[in-house]
Amino acid sequence: MKEAQRLRVFLSVFLVLHIAFIPLIASYGLAVCAVLRIAGFWLGCAYSALFVAVAYSVNTALILLFQRQVALAKKSWVHPLIYLVATVIALLTLQYISNIPHAMFRTRAPDILLLTSMLLGLTQYYGMVWVRESGNGGNSGPIGKLWRSHSLRATLPIFAMAVVLVHFALAQMTLARLTSSSMLEMANDVMGVTIFLLCWLLSTYLFHFLAERDCVLRISQQLKAIEAGDFSQPEVRVNWGLWLFLSERLRDFGQTMKERTYLVKSFSRFVAQDVVDRATKKEIAIVEEQGESVELTILVVDIRDFTRIAGELPADKIILLLNSYFNMVIDIFVRHRIHIDKFIGDGILAYVDPSGDPQRENDCAVRALQEVLESLGSLNTRLNREGLPAVNIGGGIHRGTVIRGFIGSSHRIDHTIIGDPVNRASRLESLTKDYGVALIISDDVYQTISSPFRALFRPLGSARLKGVDEELKIFGYGH
Image (cartoon, one colour):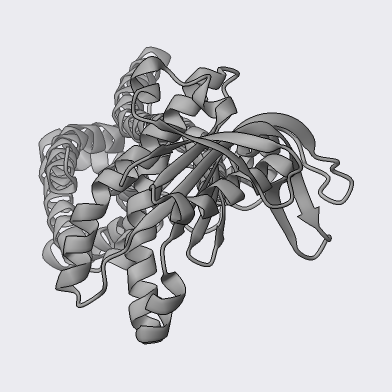
């Protein structure tokens, strides 16, 4: 329900409550004041109706006026203050119209009307809190203070009801000494007032409980949003103290989770997903970390003649070319669960996320580089529209056991892979220029890839890699 609809509902209920107070005020006056008994019930009703009409009209006008002052209207104390102003205006209006010297005749009419104003002002306080759906906002403060505030707000109507009943009882006892009222009449009067006050209490608490329900629903929405991974928590809009405390804590938790998510996403751009998972479960002691020995399928990709291309282009064009190329390659690598270990100028060192299945990992590496080669045509078309030269690449794939871990110092670190298989993959990539192919894989990779991929490669014989003593059987693809 929107705020405007809630306001209409509240003002309608509030009008009914004002009308119900008319006979109560008259009956209350007859029960506690000898002077008002002389006036009679119907004159009392007329007097009360005039007071209620003026108070309700002025109060409604002030509420509608203050609705435009959003910042002020959100202050929950404003609304009972508005009703107090309306009460004063109504009393002055009654005094001007009736010209009754209450002090001279010692009537209790002003007392009764002020008590009525207190009760209706409390109802307005709870009702407008429900209408506005938000309290004062700001920091929630210490939880002990909030608990006391929450308890006071929950018990304030009962306290107000008790004040009215005590006033009624004392006034009746005073009147009983002046008149011949029987105990039965006094008991009936107390019973009638009590029943009406219980009805008032029910209507007032109805708005209180509706506001509490709104708080519960908003807290529930916050919890569901956090559960769904939506950490963009809205501004706290909770009325009551303890609910405000809980909502603020959830908002802070959501902000923390949002920052953690951003951090994990950013961290995952630099390291493999399994390293991210390990880091989120426990702190990785970087300086003492010894690394881990792991068997990986390693890929090295490089742009052909990049030195010449870089010498012919201005710096901004070089960056544009590299970013266009890297975006295309990385999109393909991500789809095949291939992690970028590092960029080496125009080259890329990467490896397939380990799954424990060498054939699947080798197939992923071969298929990814095959897609890269197939995508070069569309990439070069875009580069040509930008006035940039076409690019050609060479790639090498090798599988072996490497050390993966953090290297560096406590001030600057890098997570990378090191070992002879990395060097061999780099040397295989370099051989693509000598053999006139786009991709070279080692025999270790060739023997474990699936048959459809194996059929794409042709044997290139044996080659002695730089820094490697034994010769290595190699297989080529492309060109």
